[in-house]
Length: 324
Image 1 (tube, rainbow, N blue to C red):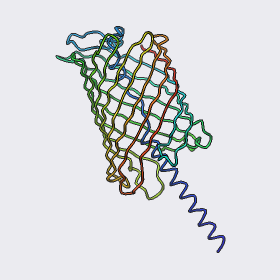
Image 2: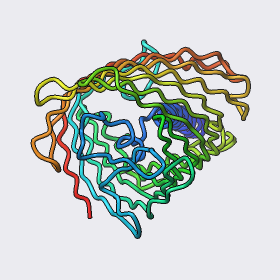
Image 3: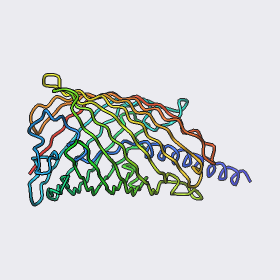
């Protein structure tokens, strides 16, 4: 009887531990900052950078780094080391600060530039792979690699507006266990407006809607599509040139609504404030410093779990880019 009781206690403790890890992995995946498609970063660059844009026949801003016909390709590498106060996006009673080191390799192609009556249209494809390592020892079990890919059709207009429609894919895989923690298929649409506030400052407004069809790591009996959601996003940022530096403050507001499994009835409202300072050493190499604050207010779903959290980031990065 003692052996049976001991076995039951051991099985129960393992089940509880796996359940806690599953919740932490879900929180991490659901709150992860995914790489933005490179064309969207290019579209929001300051108009002062004459090397980035030229006028098309329709009056729209065309990236001159893209060929008029054929395929233009870019590759890059980005390495970041930073402090994160709440890496697993848990409530304040369970958060554990750590340093993080991420290394991202990315590439993509612009599949030609097409002048329409009132816009310049460019199809893009791209992908990235990120190694995410936690510096705190007991968080090493949550180290993961992230794969992201996208296909995007971007139309840029002469009045500074751009419209896009795309499809993205994301997948997180555990480094320690070599298991898939998260998978996301996401069709999306968005608009962006970039305009000059002065010769040194550009304002960028962006709005998007995306649907997320997900599969996430769960214990037996749970719904693996628990993180399925519809996401609405608004952001406003500035790109300000100060000497050799580019200073970029940004505010982003996200609203997510869930309707699957234990998340049925859950709604999230997330505020993200960030500041980034870039120092371009050359056309292909830059150094950056950045900081950010994230706050999520969540209404409980049918599982009555608290998904509120706050997190601070601060760190530095270097980036290399090559275009062909």
